[in-house]
Length: 115
Image (cartoon, rainbow, N blue to C red; front, top):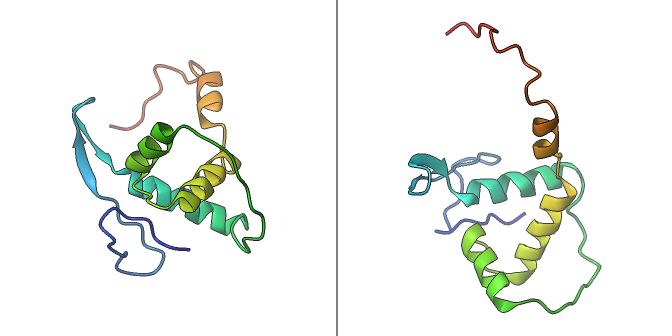
């Protein structure tokens, strides 16, 4: 698996995920860059056996603005790598959002967390 970083840097040790942190002006908090997300999705897909021999070819037409925005958002430059990431993200989707919403309000609001 090739590392997909904006600066081309490689993690210090194999398997390490190094995330750059930047301040998000929208929320006023620090957030990990999308490079960490790309790496996490691709590592999870690799561990699940979803990545391997590339023997199938796909083709299609898309809006070039969509492609460029996705490349900017992820830091992925190659079309093939971007498509692979997108498919891996869909294939590895754990339905967190739906599960989180379904369990909303089920935790006792007076539960003590110890801090």
